Amino acid sequence: MQIKAAVVAARSAPFVIETLELAKPRTDELIVRVVASGMCQTDLHGRDGYYAVTSYPAVFGHEGAGVVHAVGSAVCEFAPGDHVVMSYPWCGECAHCRRQRLNYCLNARNLKNKGTRADGSMLLAQNGAPVYGAFFQQSSFGTFALTQARYAIKVRGDAPLDLIGPLACSGQTGAGAVLNVLKPQAGESLAVFGAGAVGLSALMAAKIAGCTPLVAVDVHTHRLELARELGATDTIDAKRCGDVAAEIRKVSGGGVLYAVDTSAVPKALREAIESLMPGGTCVLLGSARAGTEAAFEMPFLQQGRVVRGVAQGDSVPREFIPYLIDLMLAGKFPLEKMVTFYDLAEINRAAAESSAGIAIKPVLRMPAN
Ligand SMILES: [Zn+2]
Ligand SMILES: [Zn+2]
Image 1 (spheres, protein in one colour):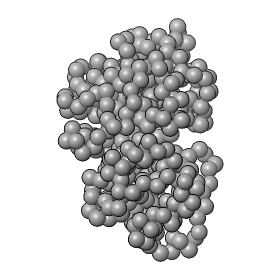
Image 2 (spheres, rainbow, N blue to C red):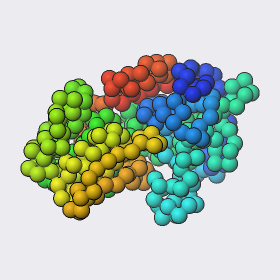
Image 3 (cartoon, protein in one colour):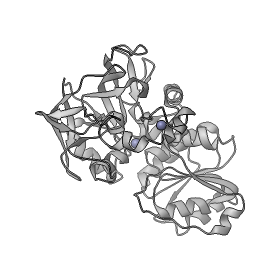
Image 4 (cartoon, rainbow, N blue to C red):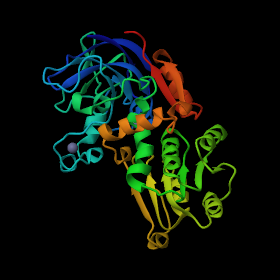
């Protein structure tokens, strides 16, 4: 079928809206009419050639939400008309997948970034010439997307499809790191470094858990204001504060039990580690470029401090995304406060305003096909 999608012709080239041909679904696949898709830093990393396996021309997008349009012959759990979110891909066969640790799938890199199905086949073409799609096995920056049924999550019919796409990546990454990994108890202290979409999702989850003090660190005033509105008890502007870790130790009475780094900036990661009390845990969620190194003092870890990375919030999407939607519709996870909407045709402006820190979470609304 014909679709419209945002194509990147070559590394770092702008997005251009083109008419493409989308493959027919195989027996275990779905075609989703995309209503809206969040934009994540990862899409721009794909555009800019950060992943060695990516080829061009390519279509990105991995936070798609929409309506099931067609199902393969073996798909019985979905029917046309179902409302769905598409989340990250996994192989189902590696050691981690066999134990339900889908977010650490050993074959994830190719499934996310290679631009083809697992068997190397292509999903998109323009005038007969192949176009790489299958970004996170979905490529949601288009009017329709093809994915495997197992990566789709059915959502309640009253969930706003133009808003919930970001739960598929940034939302579950931030909220999952807190609720699935750190599991703070009410009254425990937590600091978030970077008040972007991932950081604010972590902050909203920490507020749900009852964390206090709840500290947000960023370099943009408007993000810190939003962090306060979403539940931060203290905010620190890292551009103005000479010693962020000392300031956190001051407001928390000796350091926080949990620190969440979403910045992917080595200096911020060090500050996050140094803001921990003994026995505290720092999780790293930001996606730094290959080759990025960070330093900290070794004796600091001796007092039981833990530093670990977390991917996709250790979430099992079919359990966690419907849970986040319930929280959202109950007013406890107000994702809408961080979203800026753009039409698909404005995708380059969305990308620029995201990179400049103006738009916290751009969401692209798809046109009628
Ligand atoms: Zn796997
Ligand atoms: Zn993402």
